[in-house]
Structures are given as structure tokens and as C-alpha cells.
Length: 343
Image (tube, rainbow, N blue to C red):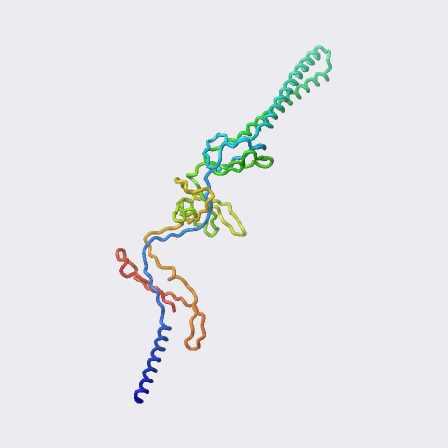
């Protein structure tokens, strides 16, 4: 029994040495990752976000101030050009028209009197029974009466126009997408016309206003295809085309962008005004080309431990070695492959 103890110790020692040696070999061995080279489409796209808007969106306001007496349409109402959509209380404006008509009649009477006086004075001056000063005074009074008549006529026309503006009509055919007032509310048009309705001409044709960064605007051209999604339909992709790249820069916190308008067809009326669109402008597209994983083109850093000192050394690591066999048409599944080796 004692003779086998030394041999058993030797065997155990050899096993330990073999295990350690094997682990060292495995630690120093190169790691390989393999992936298949495929064929398929490749697309280069510029991404941006934008807002869906009607192509023609008219804000209907009021040119006069007053109380809203009646509203004839509401949200989503279809309207025609010239249709009455709201009515402002016309009482004050009707009184102004009546007053202007009276002033005009008074001016007409004064003009007739001035004409009679001027004719009489001319006859008396011809008979040398009136002085030239009287004649000149009569003629000046006549001219003043004529000018005053024009002033009163202009005041009447203005009063009638203000009265007509109490009736608010739609300028275009379309759909009401916004209403900003209620019956009884007072609108003041002192500085700018208050907005009462927003009317979209045709919701089947919309556009997306996107802000494209200055680094990407150089590759964006008119008539390029566009794919976009909205949060309301996350699983559905909509399509459009670039219709305009505006030259006016938009600068926000030193970031320069350019407004790019994308035309969109909306026959099913799924898209609503104001929706946020996630846009991909297709600037280049190729079909049936070789595809290699992006991991084969990356460069990084790795921490490699020294087996002697145990001190980790930071070295530049990924030297990419790609060995591949170019796939042939009809034999794609046979042996296309590439190897990534980290050393």
C-alpha cells in the first residue's frame, strides 16, 4: 500500500499541472464570432420630427369689435365659401349707419343752398349790384358744401362696411377644425383681428413641417420619398414626398435647422392636424447588395490582464480580421461567412 502513495501523488500532481496548463491555453486563445453575409436592400435616410398641418389653413377673424350674437357652425362642420358662420350684434353699427345717412342728407341740403346762393350772387354781380367779395364768398361756400358732401358719403360707406362685417362668412370651402369663441363673448379688434374659427380647406391633402439639421439638409432634395409614423398608429407606416426645402434658417440656441415641407395624401382621414410625425427622408436606396454586420466595423478598447504580473493593461484591441467567401446568386445558404477576431 505504501508503494502506491508516491505514484498517486505524482498522478494528482500531473492532473493539476494539466488543468492549469489547459486553463492558460484557453485564456490566451483568440475569441471568434461568426455571422452570415447576406444580400438585401440598404437605405440611407435623414430622420427628423415634424407636425402634420392642412395644406390650406385659414384663420377666420373679425374686423369689428362687439358681442357674438350667433354661431352657425361648430367643430368639424363642413362649410362652403360665402356661408355665414357667425354674427356679431349689429345694433351699434346700425345706429352708426342711420346717423351717417342723416349727416349725408344734411350735407346734400347745404350743397343745394350753396348752389342757389352762388347762382344768385353771380346774377347780382352781373348787374353790378353785388361786390366781387360777395361772389367769391358764395363760390367758396359752394365748394365747401361739395367737399363736405363727399366726407359724409365716405362716413356712410364706412358705417355700412362695418355693419356688413358684423356678418362673418367663410372665405373657402372646408372643415372647421377650431372654434375660439362662444355666444355672448366680446371680441375686440383694436390692434389685430381676433381669430374666431380655423378652417382647413381639404384634410385629404396634408403636409408635414419638419426641421432638418444643417448637417443633413445638403442631401435632402425635392421629390425624395419619405416614410413616417405617428403615435396614433405606431404599427403603420405612411408615405409622402418632399415638396419644398425652404432657404430661411431657423436658429434655436445656436442650432440651425431648415424647414422642409413634406406632402402627404390622407384619403382615409386617419391623420389629424397637429399630430407629431417621426420622419425618415430616403436619400439613397439600393436593392440586392451585400450586407455585413456593423459589429465587424467597430473599433474599441479592452482590458487584458497580464498572466505574469496580474496587472491589467489598457491596450487598443479590436484589430478586425474579416475572411469571407462572397456569396453567389442561388447559393446564398451554402457557405457565406466572415470571422471577427479580437487580438
